[in-house]
Image (cartoon, rainbow, N blue to C red; front, side, top):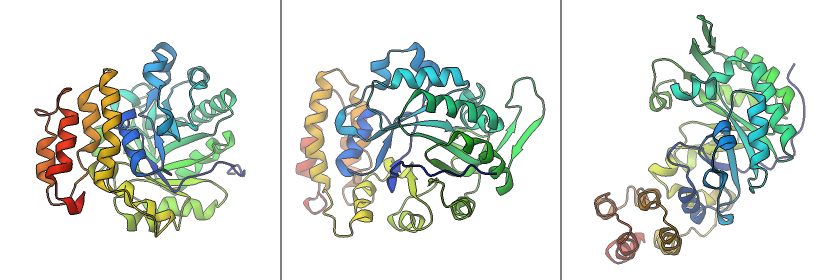
Length: 343
């Protein structure tokens, strides 16, 4: 029987997914210029990296980025507890457990989506995380897994598919009372598909997630997977509590500015020119600190996606042009050479 409880967490209508090599702090700062309300996530960080690593390098973020959620991957409750305790001194708004990453490197260590093969372990890890912090603790998972040989020493094929299997998983997990369930509406295939293919080949099943919210209205449920337009996001928000956006946030980043109209149809949308002007002082400051110039330039790449002048902009920001001594100059030049009607 699903644990019935009411979470007091405030769920934003929009969040920006944790994405490896994308959701770094420069990307988050850039996103925040366009959207003040979305919840932003770190990249997935392993508990072991937090326990054994340089905490400031791994966990530091600027106050202007907030609210930011820390996502961790863990394979034991002990590691999860230690990692969350160490992260307590950083001002994350919530802590999220990754049960959705399908990469071999992660699943091979019984983390990410592979964790779904052991629902009791997921319960133990979530319980340890909740013991370690008073902040909200959330979980991101798939609707199912095809996990051949994901558990060491077992040569069986572990398959979790269909609504009843999902409920069986959640029946145990819910006893830890996670504050939100972010459900990626695809199964994860843990053998034979790359992480990229796992974002595209397994079919989306939004209806399973919508059914979950309808059957268990008291659960706080956010949906993830393939949302790229204001219309599709608005429709999903009539059925669940929130929508997590992934690839669209870097393939067509100006969508984030337009998403302000979800909360206020008459909201004044920041212009592309204003975004660039606001980003330049940050770039200057971070370059002086020694930040990587290509990481600073990367979030800008799709700012003019689908607009006239897009090709010219991408040429200006090509890796051969972008250097520590040229990036600010390029951004200032953009404000001059790009069509004024789209700036």
